[in-house]
Image (cartoon, rainbow, N blue to C red; front, side):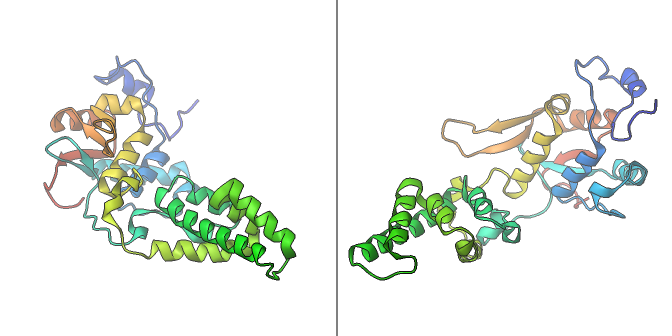
Length: 270
């Protein structure tokens, strides 16, 4: 039976490779590796969307990447970065949020959940909504839906906070809250809150995600380690190269990988 094209090394290549004695099966999806390289900025021209490309269509693309590999840059301390420059100004430069994909209140809650800065913004909205609802109820104001609806809104916020408010308002409030989200994305970054940034942010974060997805066995062969905080409370997350760059590149060649390493600032973008 033919071996799948999404395999980096054939069994015969593995047997003849200097890493053949490694206690793992070095098998990776070419499609996944190409997707990861595109994610870190590799210029890969595809005839069709990657997910729709056949194995036959991937063959020449893979061969091109092997012939002209993408280069990750390594700092003097071993931190691996994607190529290029990153100069963020707006929240949207740091947080990858596509509001057009938010089509339900649950989508909105999922997008906000885990984002400390957005949670703070919506907690403020929930506090204001709670105060307004309580004030209207206490003053006997006539509101749409009556006092029972005010009671229900107060109870929803007191129990669930900003999540309770979004769930209570439902589809009717979705566009209003998406507008809040879009406004926040267009605001300038507050660099006092970098600890809230996602670990995938920036060139360092892009490289981190790439090597995390590459798998532990490949990382071990190359000498790449994932660092999640270099001390308690640290916000430093990175992929680091512990091997010598030349040795790591030799291993990458032996493994048939379409990327290499170089010192930070060396050469032009590949």
